[in-house]
Image 1 (cartoon, each protein chain N blue to C red):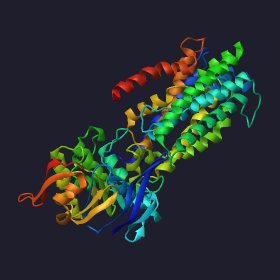
Image 2 (cartoon, chains in turn orange, yellow; image 1 turned 90 degrees about the horizontal axis):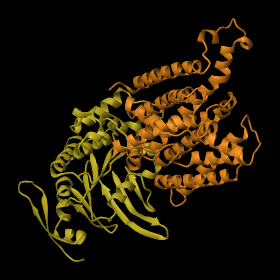
Image 3 (cartoon, chains in turn red, cyan; image 1 turned 90 degrees about the vertical axis):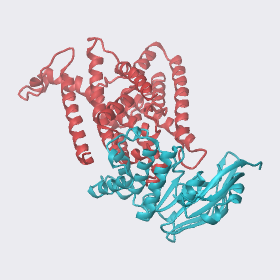
Image 4 (spheres, rainbow over the protein chains, first blue to last red; image 1 turned 180 degrees about the vertical axis):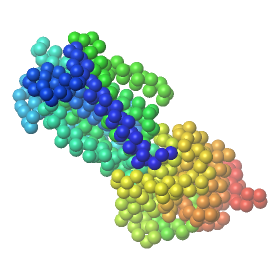
Amino acid sequence: MKPVRARIVAVLAGFGTLLAVVALAAPLIGSTPISIARVFDRTIPFADNVDAQIFFIARFPRVLAAAVVGGTLAVAGVVFQALFRNPLATPDTLGVSAGAALGAMVAITFHLDVSVGGYSSIPLASLAGAFGALGIVYALATARRRGLSTTVLLLAGVTMTAFFSALIMFTQYLADFTDTLRMVRWLMGMLDIGGYTPIVAVVPLLVAAGAVCATLPRALDLLSLGADAAAARGVDVFRTERAALFGASLATGAAVSISGPVGFIGIIVPHMVRLMIGSDHRLVLPGSALFGASFLIVCDLIARTLFSPIEVPVGVVTAILGGPFFLWLLLRRA
Amino acid sequence: MLRVRDVSFSYSRGRETRLVLDRVSMEVERGATVGLLGPNGSGKTTLLRIIAGILMPQSGTVQLNDVPIAQFDRRQLAQRIAMVPQETHSTFDFTVLDIVLMGRFAHLGPFVLEGPSDFSIARRALESTGTSAFEDRLFSTLSGGEKQRVVIASALAQSAELLLLDEPTASLDVGHQLEVQSLLARLNREQGVTMVLSTHDLNFAAAMCETLVLLREGRVLACGPTKDVLNAESVLALYGVEADVQLHPRAGHLVVTPLARTVR
């Protein structure tokens, strides 16, 4: 077995190269063909360079959003699967995505008009919904005993997801026709964010979530052997589980606030990465971040080019790929 | 080396509280092999988890080399006490070497990767447990006995002074039971590993342990050298089972033959 350091470098180099290629190629493809030479031709002023405008204004923000959302949801999936010791767990399992969706639905229905630090009302309400859901689920999981009950956490998450879904339907019922259409589009997941501001706005959250998740890999390896085995080998189980919960939830909330709930990324990507490089979380976490970013960029490329000029919501593409993959995984484990 | 003093512990569920350990005391000398015997629910696993620092006793103290274990943080404690649970399942596929290297966690700081000395300790642990041949195999593909030996190797890689084993031969067939038994005996004899193990297998305990602690309903019923403590009366008192307890001439240790269950 190669030393871990060499394997980490190989993973970063391999998946990093893939991401660089995909991120550079994706904006070149679309209904209007553009030339990479013209995009980066400095002799043409930006105001006159249509190719550069399409690349940097129309397509690259979307590619960047796909990379950020894909990488973030993939990392959240890895962490949730280790936290729950359940390979079928996803960032949606805990109810954070549903809470975020409910926040966004409320903002759309009641036409909330607030803006904080570059954040407009829908992502802001979505983040508030994500944190509200996390708070409720965490309070339930810690209410009856010292420490964190992952079983209660899981059951509370599933219940809260169902409850939030009911509230989303009720909110949709209250909305008018135009708002309902906006809601349905948002719930399908969309990366057409119209600029860099929504991405820049979540950078502090993503940095915080990334910093928390970066401390976790080896402890997550041990947690997957069981809480007692992990504790006996030196893991502070309560602290690790709490950090994992907050780190992954923060990441999920931030990602969903950009794009809406894009399903299945958090389950497809971690398992594909494990099939390629094994289960060591010191490799799987960075590998999933980079591969998740590439994967969603490609899914979004399919979404916007397959039936061009009509665009399919990216959530539809990930669901069409993810549904069968999930069932395959389920049957493989059974 | 290890001193457990008046340890009590109870589990609470709603308004119901169940006392699992009631003022339990015991001592373990360095290099000893001590067995915890008792029927289901007598508190054996709870006592092991308290000694490992996974549970905190509601009263009483556990001291290692005269230092209360409550003074150690989790990593410091894992450098001193290792534990092998009854069964180990991994949610994800790790290789055998990966599992054993995880035993080095307590000796590495945050963001520090295993170095050559950690690999050499892990490989020595694999050799000690006769599992070197499958270091690259996936843990999930091993048999029950092989898995248990790998988990013991992982615990040995912790380089701890004290090894706790919770029913190490439970769910193993007789061949694998003897395999694990001879491995533990060799580790104790050749490397001086101090062990506290819980078991339902009285013959395994008789073969392995020089000292026994008999637990019933969370209390110590008897404690002392195996040859003095393990007899027909104690088996009857512990399990409500009439048994024949004889020194086996070929095995060289006491052998317990259960005869009949008595109404308690």
